[in-house]
Structures are given as C-alpha cells and as structure tokens.
Length: 176
Image 1 (spheres, rainbow, N blue to C red):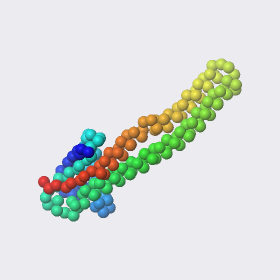
Image 2 (cartoon, helix red, strand yellow):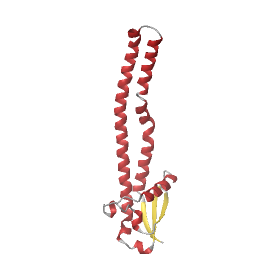
Image 3 (cartoon, rainbow, N blue to C red):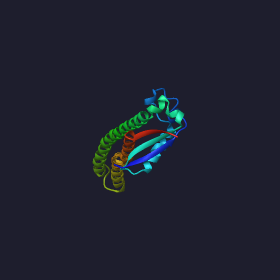
Image 4 (cartoon, rainbow, N blue to C red):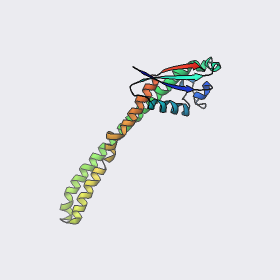
C-alpha cells in the first residue's frame, strides 16, 4: 500500500502537546493547532494511502525522553479520537432509532386521525384541511430519523476512518 507523508516542523516537543493536559506524556492530547494541521493535511491525501507522519525537531530536542515518546503519543491520540468518534456514531444511531420509533408512532396516529377527520367534522374543506395537515405532520415527524439514517452518519464515519488511519500511521522523529 502506498504511503503519503505528513510533515511537521516543531521547535520543541512540548509545543506539540496541550500544555494544560495533566496526563502522562504518552496520554497527552495533541495541541489543537497541531491536530488540526495533521488532520487537514491528511484529508487532502488519497484515501487509499497509509500515512507516515514525520516530526522535524531541532537535534537537541530529539535527544529528550519526550521526543522518543512522540510516535506512541501521536498514535494513541488518534486512536482515542477514533474511539470518541465511534461513540458519537453509536449515539447518533441510538438517537435515530428513538426518533424513528417516535416518528413512526406519530405517523400512524396521524394517519388514523386523518381518516377519522371526515367522520368527526363531516365532509368539507375544514375536514380536508385537517386530514392533509395531519398527514403532513406525520411525515414531518419522520424527517429527523430519515436525515440521520440517510445523510448524517456518512461524515462521522469518514472522520472515524481518517482518525483510524492516522492512529496506524508510521510516526518518525527526525532532527533538523
């Protein structure tokens, strides 16, 4: 499989990670700008390529203990992001299932109510207006679940796949 390279130039190891993150180095979050840079670059690369992330550091920084942990830290960060996005996707589908149950229930009730409208109101324009309004309400109640199951999950799945690819990237630290 071909590899695409993402290159970062960093002056010091600490600038690559969130300074306020209390976790040990390997578990620290990437700096927001660094993550955004990597992700934006990765989005531009072909989807069938593996990634190689090359972090360029000054020679003095390459000799620090933190520099040796950069590959594991970056892979761990993106693996964690992929897990978080997977959780978001599961939550979206859970919301979609609940919304579907509500939407279908509302649709069924609206269909029955619209069929009863003429009986209750008698023939005429008012009964017809109520019938049509109830049918429209029933379909509108299904708008959100249809939107979730037809469109909303694609970008989330794509983001998860990107993070998984970044988590599996070959990460190298090179002296500049």
